[in-house]
Each structure stands twice: as structure tokens, then as C-alpha cells.
Length: 240
Image 1 (cartoon, rainbow, N blue to C red):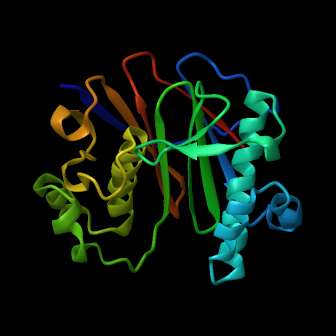
Image 2: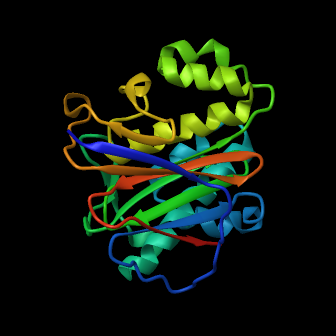
Image 3: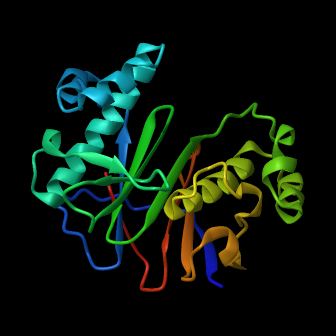
């Protein structure tokens, strides 16, 4: 039976590094402003595959189409730097757990999440999952907590009475399930999210090794979390 260690960090030091080198046992997290990059939308559209362009056009609002396009293009640009290949030349597929991968290179792991005006992309040499959620001030958590949270988590949320507390726990659950490739709908209620060390049921998650989940706030409006296998040293770097 494996373990999951959940921590949070209060302040981040985002640094810029234009020629990334993936350190051993490291996770590189990129933040992308979907507002500041909107002026490059035509450039980004040209990088997408036909399937990705079709996906973008399924969104009814142009703003949502652009956010999707920027996120996917940013992923291609970032991965291309690691793999020394043109962004448009990258070919993606999904595994049995619906986790995307680059067909020509299975040594890199990555995950992407976007919400409202921001996207996060994580790149690693180990399994990784990332999630970002815009904290809706008027969000009513009581409508869904019974279905997706344990009794201890519900007690914690009841003591906090804030939307921020809800999304902090939610992103931790999502990041972990994305890292394991099980999908958001699988075992959400049984996925730990409170700070501390928790035992994992191998029958549910299928993984025997340990995991770490780090929760953080991008700013006061966005709750985030990253999850990765932790049987080796856990390392994070942040880029602007």
C-alpha cells in the first residue's frame, strides 16, 4: 500500500528560464496568462493540429476558443524545447487512462490545466498531474460535498466557510487523479485532500509507490495543486 503526502506552500518564486533542462526527479511548472497572450492567437492557431482546431471551434464563445488554443499551443511550444522538435510536428495520443503523451517520446510526462484567465503546464520525468481552478466567490459547495468529500474533509470545509478552502481541496484531488490517469470521476470521494500523510488503497488506485501533492495559490483568485510520484526526491521549479 502506498502513501500520499499532502503539503501546501504560501509563497512562490516564479523564475524565467528560456532554455529549460529537465533536472532528475524534477517537475517544471509553467504559468501562462491566457489574457496577455491573446494578441498572438493567429500565431497559436497555426501550431495546432486539425483535431485541436476542431476541438477549439466546439466552444461557443470566442473567448473560450482562444483560451483553449493558447493553452494547447503553449503546451506544444514548451514540449518542443525539451524534445528539440518543431511545435507543430508533435504528435499526441492517449493511453488507456486517457492521459496524453507524445508518440515519439515516452520519457517525458506532462499535464495541463486551465481555468478562466490562466493555464498551468507541468513537465516531468515522472508521472505528474496538475490542476488550477478559479475561485468563484459565490460558489455553493454544500451542493456537492456529500458526493465528493469524506466526512473529515466535510468537517474541515464546514469550519472554513470559504470557497477558497473548497477549491484548495478540490484541486488536490484532481491533480492526484490526473497523475494516476484515473480521471476526475473515479474515486474522487476516496481521494485524500487534507494536509498530512494518508494511506492509499492499492485496490482503488493501482499504484504501490508513494505520491506527493503540493497545493498553492497562483494568486488570491486561483487555487492550484500538483501531484507526482514521490518514491524519489521531489523537486519543483517555477517559470514565468
